[in-house]
Figure 1 (cartoon, rainbow, N blue to C red):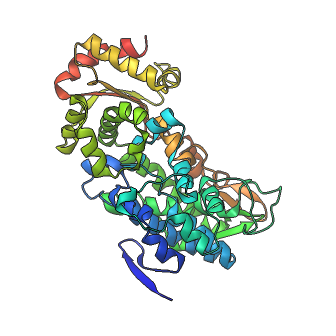
Figure 2 (spheres, rainbow, N blue to C red):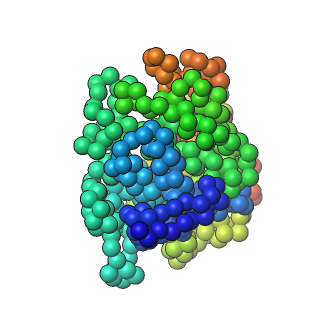
Figure 3 (tube, rainbow, N blue to C red):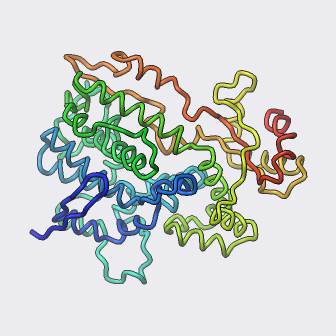
Length: 427
């Protein structure tokens, strides 16, 4: 059988053959070479130029390792590895940067889009560039794999299929297929790869996880993925790494400012032309650059790292302000835009040059695990990791990031905006 060996900077040599070799060459996966894994984070962490493709390859590698460790059947191993390889093909330009805005407008997230691409409902590749290409659903069907079932596995559907690992059991604490837990669980291939990979490329040493040892401690009981007690320390390290990577990298204030600038520049276009979410990073910036004067200025600022600056930051646990009420109000894009317009008007600056960022809403969409850290330990019965270790319990309470609201503006407008922030936002 033909095969290729891909040399990955994180996992070493990865062998691809059969359906995986064909999938690797599919344009839908090749497109991920041109989408940065960490969006605008390269403006703060210069090494963060790795792509969704390398992450997809790493997720495939880890998912295969987990499936092998759990001794699943050959067809189960194939299906879960396919799902891992394809799990991110629905990402738009700059990965999660635009996802909340797009979801607010069109009620579609990247896993929904991924499923639609796998089933052939949506095509993200221009036909003129690949007139005779084989699509992903065609490739899967040639190998007797159902595109619909792979798509639903990626979406985390709670429906068992013939190929699921064991018969469906009502006493499954997670109430989801064990294969789904390998892709979207508390200890899953996606999360393990992105924490290790993002730590490596950003140069931030917080994402250190003992991957081989942690995988050895994974077990299945009643179709539920758990760890045995020997894995408690390794699982603690995973939770610590995740928490610190979110606060130090993913929600670094300058990264969030850059992403907010890009999102505001794109909002009107996203509403009228949702197809731009099929673009690569470079194509998307070029498209915006041909748009309105405001869009062109934002792109120019981002290209040359002329970023807005922090004006006003409210702690996530600030008792002085009714932050949750404001978050609920400003989670509506129209309400948030109205507040931004009022800020600009009161400060006497041009519209669009004072931006409000609320990270909580984005976390709930891009990383739902943060809201439900519930790694299970099996020692004759299921218990949550937080029952064994105070570290896990403390991380459940830790606010990530530590701030709940941030206002930013160009340096020349900072003082003007700061004078009106409190009155406008908490009026």
